[in-house]
Length: 495
Image (cartoon, rainbow, N blue to C red):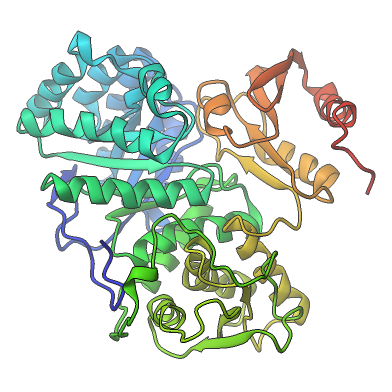
């Protein structure tokens, strides 16, 4: 159970990933991922150099096949020859054979347990191969890509994600393999935070101290993508959970690093102790208090019915959480806020999202009021609305679930996302998935109302929910055909 009164980092054991150590007393490490073709050694090495120069210690590369896994040796040799020792992580989907090869050439291998059959024993064999080559392992559970066995039993739920992770972690424990890391990613911040908290509870019950990697998948781009990542990652860092993080943006990967480093710095020191008189009021389920407020409000919209709680400490989440839990009138509506003196919008947005967003995920707040003297009133309200949307308590515009792209991406996803947002940002209460390929796309946009997924070079497949509606259509027609699909389903309106 999280200590509601103060910040304390969760105890984990150390895992070495190449020259980088994570967990234990090591600082939270920042990760990113290349979007180059892993068979292009020069391009991949050059991008890793740019990512590392931005301050990233761990870089992942897609290894969708055995060829890509083998080529990691060339990329690694070129980087080491240039004196660069960033840890290299192989990202494997579907093919255990690729993971077996990658274990020889990477510093860590990331696998999705949904792609492994425990009955065949191939996971235990991978552990032995990783042990032989001194390679770490990440058990990366993704919402929307659980195994059929887990899905049939639990549905697409945080509980199913935790059950999937735990059975693989038990195999690591039973095989005395400690160099494992675990992640529970989702594009839905509420699912993501709940899954991690339930995972920690399950691990603690079994005495496990494996390090944890944090991330919100498909966060998108621009200010909204940064805020969405900060709400989810910030909620968990504030709980003391997390040994590595990645901010997944649909932009050049080096753009992710300043945001991630900002979050790490923001949570490096959180002082103060805040007495909680009614800890029984706190629930991991995040059910909102019964205050009569249907939709959480911004500072402009708040009226005299709301009690405003303003944080003044360097641990605003714990301070405000305690203040709400200690209310004499438990059902009184409250707005939460803090003053931010940073001079630019992104700095204010990331910090406010990490500090205040968790209060909405936990169902404690009814409104948000940010004081930012360096920003305009419109900028401040834009941040407030984006935090409420990231916490999934109020949708004021379309939500774009967009992958950050990798070597599997089949089109220019940055430009395409910009085109789709320009055409559809006026829509509200719709979630639109923009995915680079079919490997992760259909599963990781599990919450989307519509999906735009790369099927082949120059070809797009359109989804309504999880159902394929139009397959392999020309990309130059895809946007207007997506609009027409929305129109047929009554979800389109003109700007």
